[in-house]
Length: 402
Image (cartoon, rainbow, N blue to C red; front, side, top):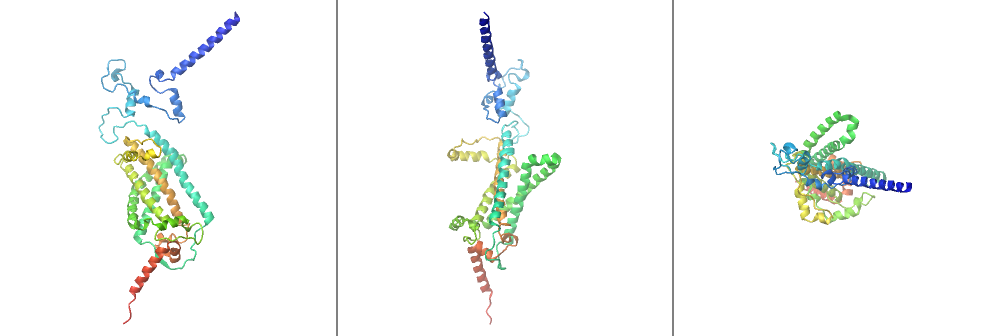
């Protein structure tokens, strides 16, 4: 009898465990939560996993205004607070606001968290690594190659490389870009790295000043971008000569191997078009940020990319074309930062080769005059054209004696 009693107890224990397990499973289903998120949803979100929230979009309550107001839910009728917030979240609520701006009726939008995670995560990480990586690469190159010399030595004879107006445009572009880069870095990294060191109040002074400088200096950058394009675009049209220059690495990796070049070599042409194309792009996204909600760009751009089939060729799903005004601003900020990081990494290399990396290079933009031997080494075709032109001018200036 005791054995039978023991078997009954064991059986009941397993049955009870099974029932409790079933109840626990039921409590984690959509039905058990009335269609709301489950414990699994919460845990998955905390782990950073993707959670399907499509069920929420259909749980918006009565939206036709016909629900009764005398049932237990009071004046809201059949619509609960949670349903109202879901209507706001998915832009389905009937909102009446006094301000009729582009974003005034958007009270809740989910993309803000995605933007914040992107801004404080991959954007800072990979943007910072790009600049530090370029500095490390140039430092290693300097240790291996040293400063590129003028192989024939300085002759003491100079020719004009750039006119004063050209140098003005270059330095206006350079100085404005450096200010924009520094203030942009302070704005992006300040909350993460500076606030823990100097505190919120001190950082706010730097942040407000950086914002003012960034917004106003941007106009000088855009103006100088137009100027250098007008001055140098004809000299930067690619030719077959540039292919030979690239194949020889510009002659910077070994002595006595400098390929022929005109006023601008292939490396300088690459810098020119990077600055023009990316500078234009960063200016457009900057204008979108300067004038919030006035210049939406990404919905139309995404639609064009989808229609051309570019997303399909890259194995991507079609890009979204129905973007909220806030999403346009967030995408503009992310794109603005990505393009700026690419430009800063490339410009660091340009600054290096134009200063400590090459003897005589700084003089081109410093005084506008370069040594003849430097010109023959790096821009021999241009030097020959200038020398021949100077010779013709000198001959015309000679007046025969009577």
